[in-house]
Amino acid sequence: MNSFDALAQKAKLDALRGRFNQQTKNQSNQSEKALFKARLNQPQILRIVPIPDGDIPIQELKFYYNTGVTEKVGSREYKISVLSPSSYGESDPLEMFEEMLTSENSEEYKNLNLDIKSKILYQLKCSSKFFLPVIVRGQEASGVKYWGVTEKLLQSLLDNIEKDGHLIYDPINGRDIKVWIEDMGTYKQTKFELGKLSSLGSEDVVKQYMTNQPELISQFTKKSFNELKEIIGKVLEPYTDTTSQPEASEETGMDYTSVHKAAPTEQTQPPVAAADPVAAEPVKTEEDPFGDLPF
Image 1 (cartoon, rainbow, N blue to C red):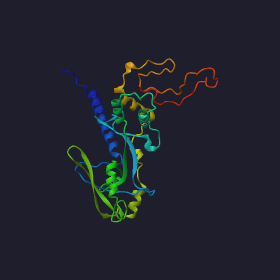
Image 2: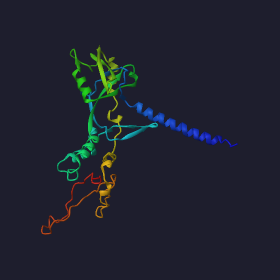
Image 3: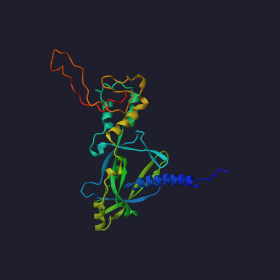
Image 4: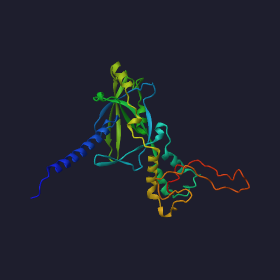
């Protein structure tokens, strides 16, 4: 009869508990985000909350939805959207590359197969999403959340933003909104209905909602310039014929079969005729952040 090692069994059980605890923690972190999600066939009541600076309570962020980037939550892997740095005032390499790809002056890409180019552009397409601060009725203790809507849904909301002379997010004479997702057969659609004239809450409650709103941008993961450039490389990878790429250049040391190496910090043009002593000096060009990508 084989001996039973209780200590070894306990160690393995502890490891299993740790795995489940981490999964629970990851799922909890996802749910702690101050983001409202409508439910399929389950109406929820929202109230749009004014923002303290007196501006309209609508913020626009830009995302990439088709890059193929995934994130593991527990034991499952999900495709996720990628936040564009242009949403918070920084340079977006995906946007820069898309502009270069469509430029008529781009020597690298002007002869690229049109079918391949259209597929790449689809994956690098950036779309806007609009966010409104809301309180979920019945969950007021959770505080202000952000309801993300498409441009089409936002247009419908704007068409109904004023009723009977009052804006629907007026804290005194506004309206609640019933929101749900409806299965339309071949697609799902978010729908809403306006409620009756009502107040957001007491004066103190309204003040609390307006002054305690989470930062929208912090609800999403910011990726670095190099991380975003790696996404471009992965998008290009299926269309890259590495056998036709040259080996590492003796002059630059750049291996063009790789998509993840750093771009050279400086490039020089060959000297022109020595008859012009000024022009004979090497000419420095602007750094090309995509010099290490394929094609």
